[in-house]
Figure 1 (cartoon, rainbow, N blue to C red):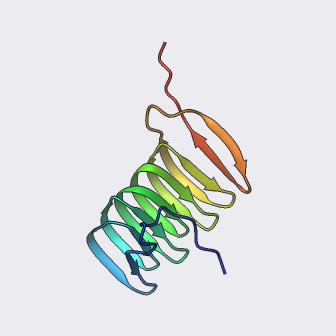
Figure 2 (spheres, rainbow, N blue to C red):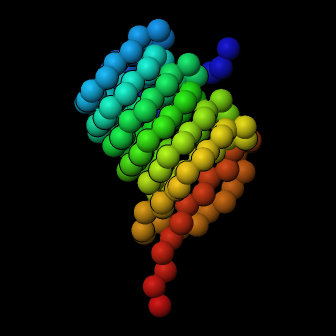
Length: 139
């Protein structure tokens, strides 16, 4: 069994919600805090918190969040203010816009990544994953 990824959970320590395995939702999902999707979601996701896509989760959406952690299937556009983390079990297709992208060995990513301005380049090994950030330097 895979250990749950670390997240910026609310101070009360809880998860805001869960879309369970074998459940499906279509439309707009808006929440604060931490939400985990282990089922299927199609549409738009907007949050000032963390979205976790579990190993069995399937999301096809435009996502705007502070942090996105993906262990399942994700297609669409992701805009994350802090970071996007692709776990080894993830399959991601689309566009990712974030200042920090973490990709674990084994993750599949097909698409584009746009790094936001004002961040520095750092490559470090954290076990099987790599962190890549970018800084735009003007002369």
